[in-house]
Length: 179
Image (cartoon, one colour):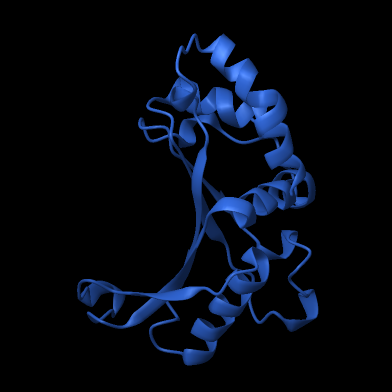
């Protein structure tokens, strides 16, 4: 079991229940899923780029990435409906907590000029989104094997109903916010 999952169930849940003034244990916010998403304008035209994106996300998450398909044709982007434009991975349960451990304690400290996460990344419903500019901050990516530096999006979905509850949860999980 991961460090963050142990800490959440033993220490964080009782503290959140008390600080948020909740009466029911099912109302305590918790992590639901984490989605990693990477798109590239070159992926629609080059299969090697698409395979590289899938390999990177698979290595980072420890779970097979699936390709995402364009829903619309956009002439300005030279994009056709049905073409592969990126990849995504949805992490749940134990793999999600293991990814949170690696993100907080190993990857984010390696980000150049990192000043903390912005609390403006919440969507109003308790979900937090952030972007990573370089995939090489993760130890799973071998710098010699990459063809191009790519970034990707990370969305942390929680069961919280508002931003304040989700922020309290993520701060308790040691997400480094710059507030």
